[in-house]
Amino acid sequence: MNKKTDAILRKLSEIAQNPKQSVLALMRRTGKKAIGCFPVYSVEELIHAAGMLPIGMWGAQTDFLHADKYLPAFACSIMKENLELAMRGAYDMLSAVTISSLCDTFKCTMANWHTVLGDKIPVVPLMFPHNRKTQNGVDYLIRELRSIQTRLTEISQKTVTDADLADSMAIYEASRQALREFVALCNDYPVTVDAKIRHLVIKASYFMDRGEYLETLNELNAELKAQPKEDADVVKVVLTGIIAEPDGLLNLLTDNRMRVVADDLAQESRQFRTPARPGLRAIEQMAYRISDQVGCPLLFEEQKSRGRMLIDLAKNNKAHGVIVVLLKFCDPEEYDYPICKAELEAAGIPHLMIEIDHNAKNFETLRTRIQSFAEILQ
Amino acid sequence: MYLGIDIGSSSSKAVILDARGKILAGEVINLGTGSKAGAEVVERALAAAGLRRDDVRYTVVTGYGRMKYAGADKQITEITCHGKGVVSLYPKARTVIDIGGQDAKCIRLDERGRVANFVMNDKCAAGTGRFLEVMARVLDCEIHALEELAERAKTTISISSTCTVFAESEVISQLSQGASREDVAYGAHKSIARRVVAMAERIGIMDQVVMTGGVSLNRGILRALREESGKRIYVPESPQTIGALGAAILARQNGSGSF
Image 1 (cartoon, each protein chain N blue to C red):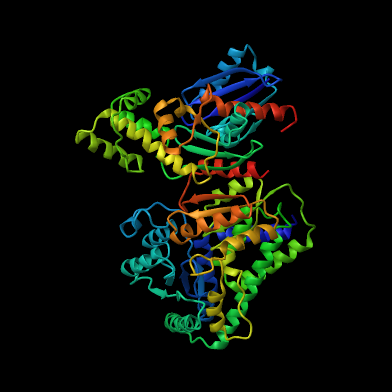
Image 2: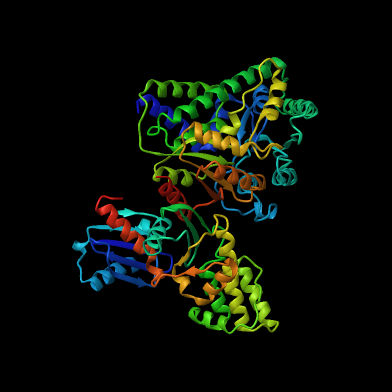
C-alpha cells in the first residue's frame, strides 16, 4: 500500500471510529448546525441544502441505564442505543433528528424521543408511503419532503431554493457513484481493503461534510486504481442485513481470510446502490430514489426481489457464499429471511445466518459459526 | 503420532492416533475451558498410549477453548471435527446432533462425508446440557439420576417455556401442583428433544442420525429424540471423544500432507 492510500484510509477510519469528536470538530470548523438522521433512509440532501450537516445515527456500544424505561428488551439494539446515548447527552450538539416510520420500533422510538427529548432535540418525523411505487405514493412523498423542507428551513433559518437542493443532490449523487466505484474496487484490492476497512470507509460518510467526503473518496479510488491489482487467497462473501457491526464481527471475517466482495447492508450499499432518475427536479429525484429502491425489506415490495438480487450479487462477484447478518429483533429482516434462504438454497449458494446484537461485546460463539462457514467454503 | 484435543465448555477430551489411524488413547476430563483440564487430558492420553510429547507429530485443537490452547499446530472448529469423527465411524451418517454443556449443534453431512450445513442454538441455554443441570437441581437429584427418574414416568409433563430460567419456575409450579418428579424429569428430556429437533429441521434431518457429546450418554434424551424425530439415533461407543477423534484425524491428514 502506498503512503497516500494509507493516509486516506487512516483518516476515514479515524473519523468513522470517533463519530462524536469528528462531528464536533466539523461543526466548529464549518459553524453549521447538525441534524441527526436515524436509519435507514433520511433526507440528507434537504439538510445539506439547508446549510446544515446530516449526521448518521447508527448506534454505538453503551450500557443501558435509561432506554429500558422506554423500549422493551426485545427492541432493536440500534434504537435502544440511540435513545440511551441521547438521554445521556451524547447527542446534545444536534438541532433536531429525523426519524422515519419504516418499522414498529421506529414508530415507538419516534414517540419516545418526542416525549423524553423533544424539548431539547425536536423530532422531524419522516413518513414514507407504504405504496411507494404508485404515482399517488410518489406524489405523497414529494409533499412529505416539501413539508420536511419547511421544518428544516425553520431550524436552519435559511431558505432552501430548488437550485440549492439541485446542488446538494448533485454532490450526493456524485458521492453515491464514488461509493459504488469504491465497493467494486475493493474486490481487486483484498489485501489493502479488508472487511473492516471497507466498512469504515463507507461509514465515514455519515460524519463528514458530503462534499469533502466525495473529494476524499475520489482520491482514494484514484490511488487504488493506480496500484497493481492484488492477488490473495481469500474466501469471498456477500453480506446482507441492516448493519455488519460491531467491529468484532468484521475482525472475525478477516481472521478467517474472508473478504466482503459485495453487500446488501442497510448501512452500506442500500444507501447508494439506487441512482437518481435523470431529468427530474431534485425533490422528485429524492422521492423516486425511494420508489425505485429494490430488495430492502423496510420498503414494501410485493415481488420480494431480494433473494434474486443476492444470488446475482454472489454470482457476479464470484462469491463463495452469503452471510445473512440478522439484527436481533429486526422484524422486517426476520420476515424476509425464510424467503431469501429458500431462494439461496435453490440456487445452490451456501449461506450462513448469524444473529447479532449491535451492543454485543463477546464473539466466541459467533467465531465458531463464521470459522465453520469458512471451513465449509474452503 | 497424531493428537486431537477438544476443549469444551464443561469437559476436555483428547484422542491419539498412530500413523495408520488406529486409536491409541482417548481420555475425558469433566472440566472445560478456563481450567487446566486441556493440558491434563493430553498428559493422560499420552500416558495411556505410553508416549511422550515429542512423539506427537501434529496436533489439532477444537472446541470452545481452542483459541486459548497454545500447544497445537492448528485450530479447527468443533463443527468440522465432529463431522470428521462421525464419518470415520459411520460412513453413511448424514446428520450429527451434538448436545454439549452450553450449546447444541446439528450438522448435515453430504454424500462424501463433508460438512454441508450446520445450525447452532443461538438464543439461550434451552436445548443444551445446562437445561438438564438446572432441572436436576430443581428435582434435587444428580444429573445422571435424571434419566432413571424419567424412565419411571407415567405421563409427560409439557414444559412450554423456552427460556431455561422461566422453565425452572414452571417446573417448580408444576411440582407444587402435584406433578410427580418422574413425569417432570421426562418432560425436561422431551423439552430438550423438541428444541433440538426443531433446530435440526432447519437444515433437514437425514438418515443416518448420529448423536455425539456428553448428553448422548443420557438414555432419556435418546428416547425423547427418537420419539420427536421419528428417526433411529446412533450413538458411538465413546460419544464424548468424537470431536477429539475428528481433530486427531485432521491432525493425521494435515501432518501427512493430505489435508
